[in-house]
Length: 416
Image 1 (cartoon, rainbow, N blue to C red):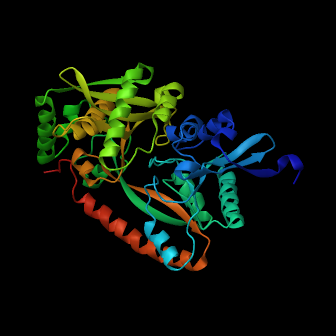
Image 2 (image 1 turned 90 degrees about the vertical axis):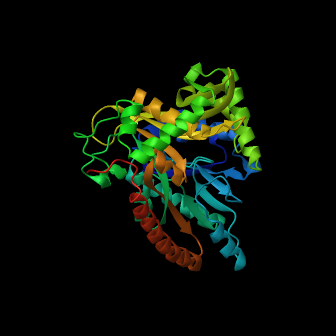
Image 3 (image 1 turned 90 degrees about the horizontal axis):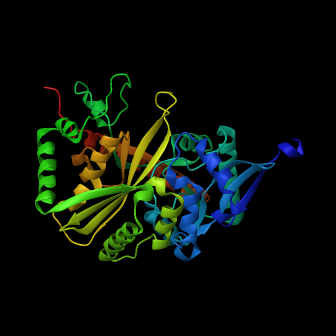
């Protein structure tokens, strides 16, 4: 191979060492990009002190270069704990400990504190993606790292990981689609892709309610009425229209909610200041007011990227539920701030999907439907790898049964 054709691996000890333009250009080539993989987001996590060695996230970003061109890259971290990942492996760590084998440090390819599915292995093509996986696993072996975990991976990532022999693990999230279900076909109403030529978007929030079963429709109206009767009104702001005072109030609510559960928040105020400064277009803030005073907030992330469904040359608007907090308790306020206000906004502004985040069967009553998410895993110890593979087979069967049981709780109206 000619010298200029060689692909060189470089491990970088900070996201700030990666050229931002090159990273974002590579992200833009992926079929499932999200704003959380943008260089600005990852750099803000580091700069703000949110995801740093002090908090247990030691950056070791893997990059592959062909001459001056960045051909593949991923956000790689060494972890001495499993907090902030949302794919739970505490039992694996306990098994290692019981046998006197160190599990930590482990390596994760993930966006810290952000359980949103999307591209994790940025690559110009499938061949470069395969080389990236090989480079990371080889580095783990050379460094004596126990394991590698690629969390909330995209379809392309999963395919490459499968080809490279990594084990797959499935979890369930709940997402809403701005798509009126075909009443004659109940399975399609459970989140399976409909024929784009026959599907239509919801015309209004009332149109959305009309698609639900009577009990679900009644419950949502009752919950919204309680919030309104408590004197709560909402306003929203997007991008640079979110004022500095709004960001301050949001963080006050966000921090208080974490502290009420006995933990400090993962993200610092400096992180959100960086978002306001460098990624304002990616954020939508809902503020609940009572008696003219703000009382609660929810922060939604937004992204637009080319549609990969129909092959047409247009972009899709996607919303991601991320953070919320309140200074006082109002019955059903959480549902209004985190689901009904965002869904109404998505319908009005033509968003195709609202991803509700990790866990939460209660989201199904609000028409967020079950979606399978996938992570990929490599373990260096052969015996533990065999044991985990058997465990994942059993767990996978359980996840499939869980999805089947959820499909029996279809919140949409059934054909008569």
